Amino acid sequence: MKREPRRQRTIGEHLPLPIPEGRATVGDAVQILPEFPDLSVDLILCDPPYFVEYQSHRGAQVTGAIDNDGKADVHVLMPALAPEFKRVVKPDGAVILFQAFGDGERSEIVGHVCRYLREAGFFVEHSYAWWKHAPGKNRLGMGRKKGPRNAVDQILVAVNAPGEYVWNRGQNVANVLEFDRGTRRAGDHPTPKPVPLLEELIDRYSDQGDLVLDPFCGGGSTLKAAQKKKRRFCGVDLCEEWVAMSNKRLGVSEAKAA
Image (cartoon, rainbow, N blue to C red):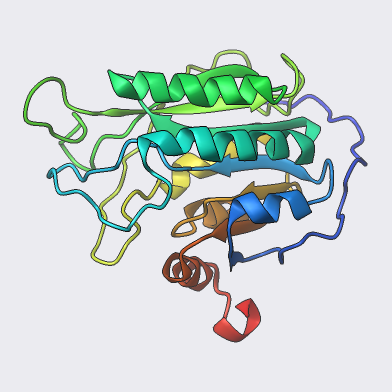
């Protein structure tokens, strides 16, 4: 498919950043984002806390594994980050956030996230449903004791103005993304996202050489996808363990990452 030619982009190109490119850095996004130059990021793609006090599909609550995941944290994190997202993202850039699919209290949380994005000046252009079925024959998602199985996560796409963003696909594109959620191994991040899904999002909303920022990089899946797609990238996470895992996946040595 022939792509439309991109207009010349000069705003914020290769401005000095407060964290190194090509790796993950230990830090707090709330503190680091204000140090980024204005209009310096092409795409923010991240899997922030869902603010749902995450439990595994077996019902065992994960203690200390996901920071800032309480239901009240949405009113702390999003008012702090949304204005910074708006300041650093280029005019034709985008912010893509994974969120829980809305049912019950979760729908209220997603509503709060959208409200804070709008208050910062973003337009929530559209959202996707990610059908996160398990590999193999289990295509119904994660189990639950009663009611429908949780087979979908929501992906929000916020932009500066309607229609004013990088889009490298045509018109006949559905808002459902079907990707296996993968098999989580011992020691993995508790909520990893599949690299092929992240590659697809990066392909859709950015070009080669663009800067992708993940302020909640976890185990580094977004950074790995950006690396594979020949984007510039950087990531931040509070947890030293996840940052070390990210840099190992990226082929960054401890000495180089320090």
